[in-house]
Image (cartoon, rainbow, N blue to C red; front, side, top):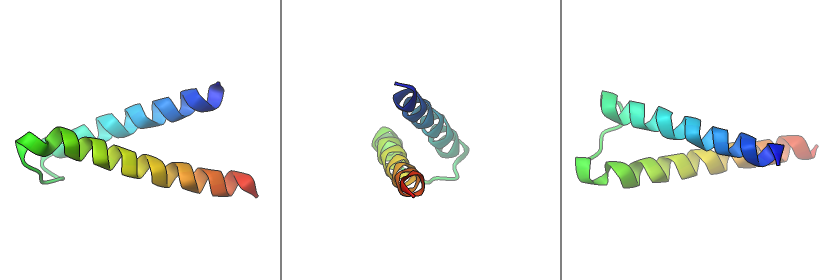
Length: 59
């Protein structure tokens, strides 16, 4: 249960971070695709972090 809470908070943090980058213009994307871009970036970053966490905790 605690692990799921950590993953949820991680995705919320990534979501806010990505939205901030898009609003500041660091990540360039059209306005219509900003939501889809945010989703893809958050999922991609989440999968990378989750995979790294899984491999490091396995050893």
